[in-house]
Length: 373
Image (cartoon, rainbow, N blue to C red; front, top):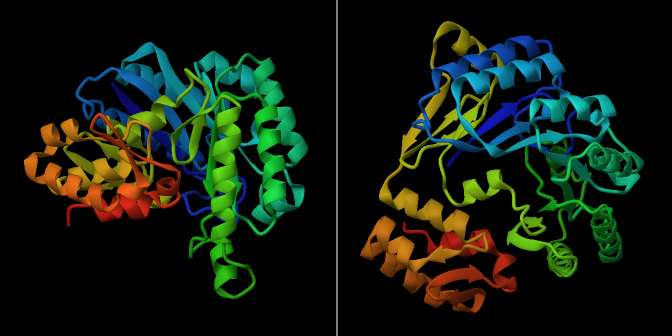
């Protein structure tokens, strides 16, 4: 199985914390869609004719696209790729783009999963984030999507901002659970240097993230979502049974995927490549037959380190049998020795290592310590 990720690099406005690649101008929107189609045509064979089980529209804000633009992309996907009738087709959407008309069109096109960027239920916090919707719109859009027949809905939340106490976060979690969605992704606020938040932090106008409070919020989230029937299948992701995100899971399980669009990444098991992070350069290169990506062949060490980094974040964990088969005895021995040093943060079950709650609080650091340098 394999997946396709399509990056739509446009947003109505810039969220203060976001460092993803996007533009707030859609002046070249038509040219961008044309370039996306051209890249698909050029890379039809990248996945070696594997059947797709996931198509993911990310961004940016894919829900900003007009119906004709989305229809053109779907027509091209059908022309170039094969996928199962059960293929998960996800569209990231902002609450302000969710209308009965759009929901009808998206469903008709085959979109069967929505990932809705709610982020917060606090209007003051939403305004601080420079989001284009209100808390009331968050509640309405989820209900609207459910009434339209979407039973696979994910919502995004952010914790760790200056607006949140532990009590506030407690209420946010209860509100999220009451929305009765099948999936919740929740991320700790990160202050990135090139964002508006990062600039204001550097100038002393914004506080840093309170790591102690964030840790308490994270542990409370695990407890409350688990009690509500969600499976904590990756550090930042929770799903009801049978609703684990195929796109997300494929990434963490290192299955092949093709990335289309500016800044999109691709992986075929042997190499990674990433497209230029500039809309104009991307369009120009596709129009003129120029180079629009960079590529890196993965060494055994690189592949091992990526395996540890992605798998340790999940319920599937790192399997010693798989490590030996994929990377050899030298890497297996190195991994086991590293795990022995980190045993207070790990759970070992039949040769599979996963993180305990303490380990989940410092997942990236532990993975880094297990890297083969």
